[in-house]
Image: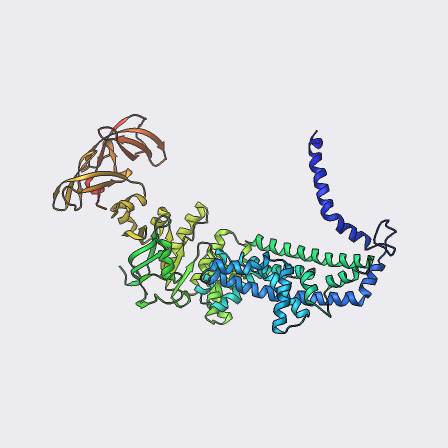
Length: 261
Length: 356
């Protein structure tokens, strides 16, 4: 009887998860297709498309671009986000609410609009389409997130700990470097990895602002135009796998931080 | 009083329209254990923060050892604070926590380690130096916070409700240890609490605060026995308050017309003034145990009885229409029952005249 009552809920949940994960599962499964088309029927297991992926110069150079843009833009977004969060938490300016709203605003603007805006602005100041331009775009979209993550960690207890350090003779800079940064280390890494994950599979900004050295998602998109191939499934699976690993790392880091309260 | 070490002169602090501290003067002697006692919102923590330099007063001056420190940051003051939430450095060992202040003063590492061990021994944490903060219990963390503040040898140690998070047994034990450590070091301690029992058991001097002003200050015995205000009389321990009017004045004593009849009390007040007479539960005696010079204060009927070992705790009503509620502590060997009428007596010197 109990099973009968729960059955609709179980079916509904299964359908919901299928809806969310089936595309990824298909992508994953057909990246191992022993054939030239990533469509049913599944003809058998093969790693040849992964070999092809790592041998493809375009895809590999795209991955290199993605890694460089991801590392540098995430580092910049984390550092800038931390400085903004520290200032807002410890030395709030006048009209702090307004400043905070402005810091968070980019999160509500579509990537397309941000990319167009950057395109025009870069044109004015003479920065051409390039990896640098993509990186700046990724800092713009990731800074609000990094700010929000780090601001949430700078509450009253953290402030008291910093006060204690200053009471014992630490200068502002010493308190920042010896106390705040080491205590926030897990949150700083979490912010960095979240930013990296978003940069890693961001398409619109990367597409509109890059030219000769496109990032991985842009390369995949341009190859898709010439038709489906299990190699692209392999590339997609690889991009997805990296994101999953990073999300797990972030969860572990934040759980550690929460556990230590 | 010993020579003043900390002097607060006319300090005020407001947050918007909320007045936290209103023109407060306070002088704390060298080597004293002073407790700022008051309910939440009484301004006691604000006063402590202004001594420590964490809050700037809107007006007035803070002097420590004769020097005006009103504008100095915490690091430049001869004070150290034990925070309510301990505020330990969780990424450092116990030893590094305790040695932090010395490291900031550029004391060489060997000396720092030695000093840290000495202070840890003083607070009963010998051999804990290498541990991490997360390996410690709440009580142990509290001791590390204390050791960290003591290690820099402050002239004044500020304690912001340091025992609030501990359970009752541990709190009692830490109270005794705080007193022991304070006497041993001879450092001036300024301690904030809302727990009047804690204040009575540790303080040389209690400063009773309410709504940003000092209601009373002095030795615990004096404040308990001769409170200066209505607030002090009720906040420090239990009390019976009788509202009345001064009927006649003769030298240093007055007669007050109360619902329990005319009571002669020491003190000064204008004839006709509205006053209160306070008398502690343990100072209202039944006829059998009344001291020789005790005067009758009327009869009361017992309404509630609880046996507490050392005494009976009783609630009773008195006065012509039974309109006065009284709290009594009666001898444990008395035979008592609900509804019983008791004639009560009190010594004139145990009754306190309160004019404010």
